[in-house]
Image (cartoon, rainbow, N blue to C red; front, side):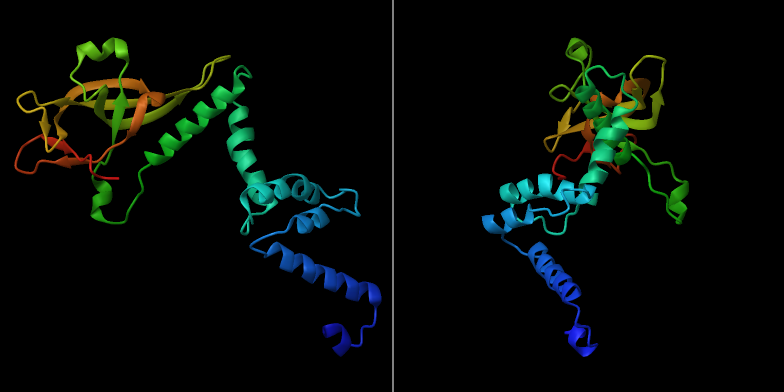
Length: 229
């Protein structure tokens, strides 16, 4: 013990050191007994410390339900609350807040998936666009050839429109793929060509990103790889 080596015979200091080690060992445990959690909830400070308050009233219940938290701390939960509750709440119009927050988070997730990374190779000068599957409006399905209600497009631009007293509008400018009518499907996947048709669509209509494979022996023919997970 360092207290013995340094001749520090202060009982309170030694007790603090012992309790700190007990607390550290408890925090590293893989399993907890109910008595451990009950002892952990005892607070001589009367919860004057906010982080201690969070641990006692939130983390203990999480441990009871899911087991050891494996290194997660209150900072993790504070960060998640800020990212997925506070920030999406601010631009809402305070009506149907939960629905607006969920739409905001989904739009941000779609936008982040469509971001293009830059490289230092010559390929950086070649335009690259995300290919997407679009869930078509049921009223318009009769006007298009579709793959069970899904059409395909290239994302050219993603934008956000702000209007006074209106919810944010997240739109994508897309160029459409169309089916090659002679052979609609090859290898159980759509056979497409890129056409000169452009539209703005709501980001909420985007079902997912897709993997498009050029047909190298043909001009402007593409396969949709449905076997990529």
